[in-house]
Length: 186
Image 1 (spheres, rainbow, N blue to C red):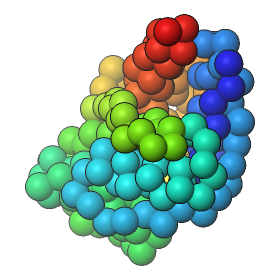
Image 2: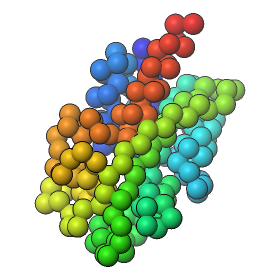
Image 3: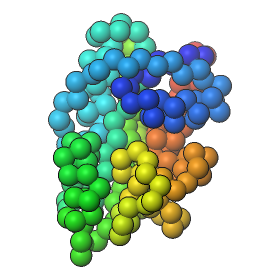
């Protein structure tokens, strides 16, 4: 079974492809640049991205949006995590969290859509905290400073299999792939 994943981020595609293979799904990649509308939730963002992508590609596909929510900041940066990271980077994030509660939650929404069908979102979460300092292992965005509950290492210090154990993306994908395989046979 093939699934088209629309993302401009090669790292995300590779991460999702590994999970898809475990489900017997062949993940195809489109790096179509889809406009990200600003909404309060990653669910709303993923639905809007799915609608934009399906209009252009006119085939079934999934898109993804991930946010990180800091408990002490009324869940800021939320769905705007990428904009905040690109604006202030790791050092800026650590600075604003000085002396604050460092609890954080990653939330991912995958939205599946077909032409003329409304998108269906699948949500996954990973609770954890923001480290006091960045990992020496430089990796993808927040992975350098995010420590999932149940571990003492940041995501960037883990191998792909270890990270997958906690992954918010994996949790959302598990829901999607289970649903997809069940409905594909109907």
